[in-house]
Amino acid sequence: MATFPLFQQAYVVNDLDHAAGEWSRLLGAGPFAIRQHHRAPRFEYRGTAQEADVSYAFGYLGDMMIQFIEQHDDTPSIYREMYGPGEEGFHHVATLVHDFAAARQYFLDQGFELACQLQTGEVDAAYFDTRTVTGGFTEIHSDPPIIIETFASWRDAHAAHRPGDPAVFERRVGSVSAQQIGLA
Image (cartoon, rainbow, N blue to C red; front, side):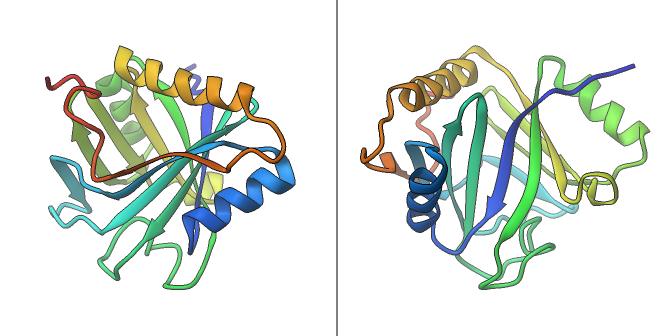
């Protein structure tokens, strides 16, 4: 029997900074790294190459990564499938996988539809429509060393985070740099 431990919970929000601030204040989450207007070099949504304009915030709460997603347009997406403009809520869970191709095939064999897939450097990710089981999508995410290192640095930032510290510690526009994802 395959097991897929969860490392992330993700939520669609209207404002990344507001969500990060509220989760930090209420639960002690963060600090958060924000990636504004992220673009993936290879992206596919429901069989098309259309990619919505989205920004992400990533932070930790204990050992669980919390991700916030803000979609800036009305392009069809896995986010707009669940929430219209102005709506917020739980969107997906994620699991890190060492054998991406085998995990992808496992979810397909279980009868779940592949809704979205992307690749950025060494990183592969796919979202399956598991709403009938989880109430949201399930993301499988590859685990190359650069991703493990990046996630560890965010977890370390959380361990050092104290009440009253800023909720956001890093902000970048666009995708992760080529060096960070192993392209340079």
